[in-house]
Length: 123
Image (cartoon, rainbow, N blue to C red; front, side):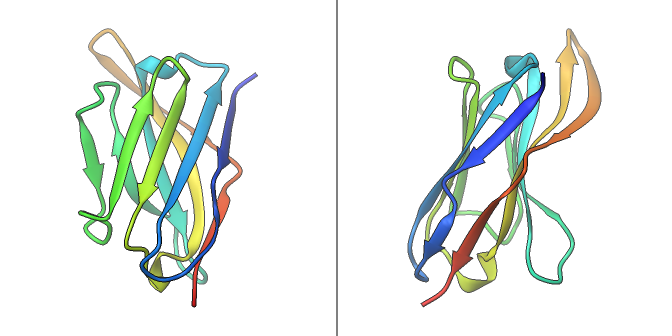
């Protein structure tokens, strides 16, 4: 059975840090492109960071560049999001996603979502 399980959310003061983790199961994690999305109050879901099967291939939203860092551990089937210098506008439900996977040189879009974890940045 396919699962994405997020953890690590919580309440943090502005300027603080959090680390989100997402453990995957039920699919070939090492061949998958993984992402973190977020949805703030009254906002649409947006891409925060993405990492392809090659660990060095990452993409970030402009709003988090220099503050957030995405990483993956294929042995542990985990993708993580290190969030520093957090701002109130980072408050959102954060979702782990598998966006697609590679079979050889062919990329197949296939979205899977985790259940989300709440991050609240407030003093």
